[in-house]
Length: 438
Image (tube, rainbow, N blue to C red):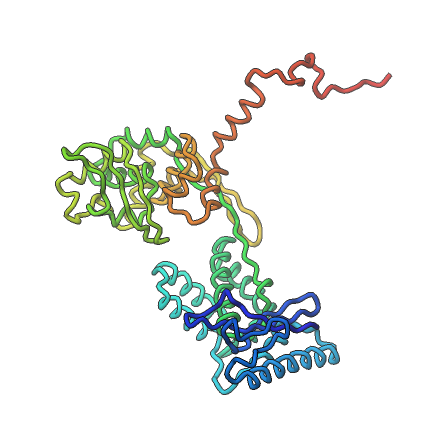
């Protein structure tokens, strides 16, 4: 085992103090742990890995580091002698032994973590997701018939049981489990790195895997059918709001909150290009969306120009559930009844089912439709990323992967259009021909 002490300048606090971390390498593992000691960069000797004399209380602080190094080395030797495989958790708990403070149970600790997120200004929906993960964890732990389970007791075997519980008892699919485990892993990392708590499971064992699923979107012909269908007065507004989202890429939460303050660029006579500028509810990203002719026509149908600055809602958006219920009826009336494949899992097996398209349509389908149709019309992926407010271009590229027509066009150009390649110069029957035996 090798033990070193280093400054983590990436964690410098507002007073300019840099935390001292212990780095221990053993058995192919690497432990990084806060020693609870801090100093100014000039007070640290990187060669000797100790505090300089200029630091107040340098001798005492150096003694603390010496004691930590001795405890870590001793724990490693004791584990080896006892035939117990050394793990990060078993070594970490001797760096900063828990003193008098009572140890929180895992659910209590996650509740405290959620309050930290609220204090740091995380969005409401993000905090709600962590609450969902905490509630699943709390329900699972009750099956263990224990009043309190500590972080150190939540080991690899228990984590496997938790994932099994989510899949079998709760009936969650792959991405539902992904969401819960991702939030759990963030909580565990916070407990380890910011609260210096010993974990019973190594973070790399907490696997997080996302499964790409086919996104439901509408074709140009589908959109045309929705525009042309004659609807009762009760359904027409829901259809128009949905089409507006197809033309702008807005989420339900954002279109429901649109008001006059989001509309910009009106000319002196109420004409000219207009844009929507807003802060997205989900990501807090600021986006600017050009209103195409089709989108502007829908907006003008419900929001007169003279009302654009008074804060009134721009579109008649119902609650999300009624909107989704109306959309299924609307798309059925528009003839969007072709079958689409839905893939899920049941009992660990992949289950495929043919479902009418109209049953799959929700308000979020409009956002998928906007992304796919924008790419088909030649919008660069980088521009689409800005319009949709994605922080990572990988999220936008998921839409590029489902644009089948682009794939078909590329294959058509490669194989069916006139070329002068060597393969086209071959005589008929020469490609994949079989030599007959003499």
